[in-house]
Amino acid sequence: MWDDLKRLAAAREGRRIDGLFTEDAGRAQTFSVEAEGMLFDYSKTQIDTEVLDALLDVARGADVEARREAMFGGAKINETEGRAVLHTALRNLAGTPVEVNGADVMPEVLDTLSRMEALASEVRASKVTDVVNIGIGGSDLGPKMGTIALAPYHDGPRCHFVSNVDGADIADALKLCDPETTLFIIASKTFTTIETMTNARTAWDWLEAKGVSTEGKFVALSSNAEKAGEWGIPASRVFGFEDWVGGRYSMWGPIGLSMMIAVGPENFRAFLEGGQAMDQHFRSAPLAENMPVLLALVGMWHNQVLGHATRAVLPYENRLSRLPAYLQQLEMESNGKSVAMDGETLVFDSGPVVWGEPGTNGQHAFYQLIHQGTRVIPCEFMVGARSHEPNLRHHHNLLLANCFAQSEALMRGRDLDEARGKVAGKFQGAELERQAKHRVFPGNRPSTTLVYPLLDPRTLGLIVALYEHRVFVEGVILDINSYDQWGVELGKELATALGPIVSGRQSAEGKDGSTRQLVAFAQRNT
Ligand SMILES: O=P(O)(O)OC[C@H]1O[C@](O)(CO)[C@@H](O)[C@@H]1O
Image (cartoon, rainbow, N blue to C red; front, side):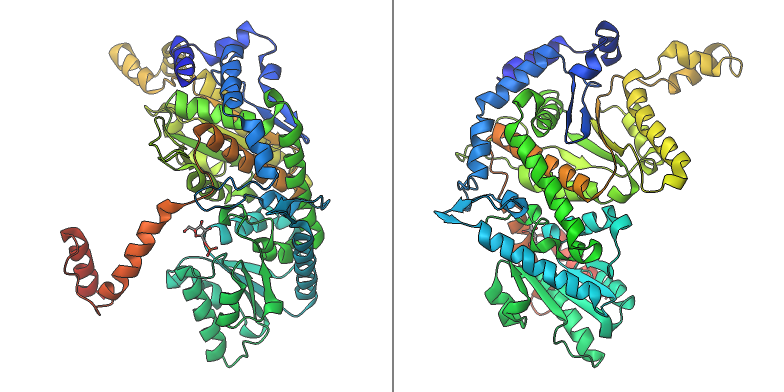
């Protein structure tokens, strides 16, 4: 299968993407899909009908549809941890039964949602001015990204997100808070993560140092109610979720509480509805018209087939400033694996490096390399047709123009003749040639564009679920487990071992020369 695709890729080497539009007037429509009011256009890539068919064959060959139903049906597809993967149940507002080990999980999911809504409403109506979410990774990135994204709907207390074990993070947040009117949300699936537990303890100590009672000031979001209880948070203030919700897929449930407090339960429900609508599309649309499937296949064409090692996510939506960071965890923690389900080494590349920044800012920072660097970086643009600032329509028109211009420029490029025209009159002879060469853009650089009507809560849900399912499809085709993260363990273990060495309670004997040098230098300069 991969060989076929590699052959198709080789046969297309050097072929111009812009030429494909000249050959086929209907290309834009053929290589785009609309779903739930969003348009995903992947026509500015080398993909043609033959390539698309081959990619769809790969998806069929990997049994994407059967695996998808296994996931939604509660099968334990996270085989290395023996767990189901059911974050979709958290947005199953209809409550249709979803069974794990023969028991319907929906009554508890909906009950927890109601409890969250009651607490959120209570907090929003109270004197609480600041909410501090203390969590890291999936217990931070989702609610933080979502709260920023939904700023126009944010009418609840201020929200702060503390994640880093660097004391600067919590110190800076606490400076902005009044101990009397601050609520701390300790978000940790395991309730053992060292960064989160350290920050939580600092918050507790801060309240005590200010002479303010800790009672009622803490809420826990965790699968480990026992640990939360031992830590001092009563069961009534613990919002639980099961092990079938992966950390990086958890913003739909209790981990989304800070976002719910910020924007209100109704808007949070609209976010869930968006996710659920994307689930329905993913489950019912034929593969060739299935947005997450196509997003995945385009990604695999660029990464696994053409060998482009990174992909840039470029939202032309300032409020999606944290989406690239969110997607880094979602995609790289999920699909950054070297071993297939059967334990054998992968024979092709796993997921790409995902990175990005909002446009237009990125244009003035790293787009130079995207346009003229020696490596090809497939770009994923996204933009809303409308903004929340109708009186600033001229800003939005500029934003749209810039977004669409970038994908056009990446595709078209500028040849030497055109470049000569740019400098003619200023230079002559050999100097004109030299100057012109610097102004050549190779073009033929692929990109996709997602356009949605407006970044509202429902649309945010659609976008997040779209990317979740893209990760799923890529993982199934790669035959890896997208739902474990063993790769983060070793660093954690070594950090635990280095703690006493760094603080001078234990010798660095036995460590490698570099580590010993780093520790010694830090100690000399404390
Ligand atoms: O919610 P927890 O258990 O504190 O974990 C935080 C994060 O740590 C990780 O396990 C990786 O270190 C992520 O998968 C997770 O989102």
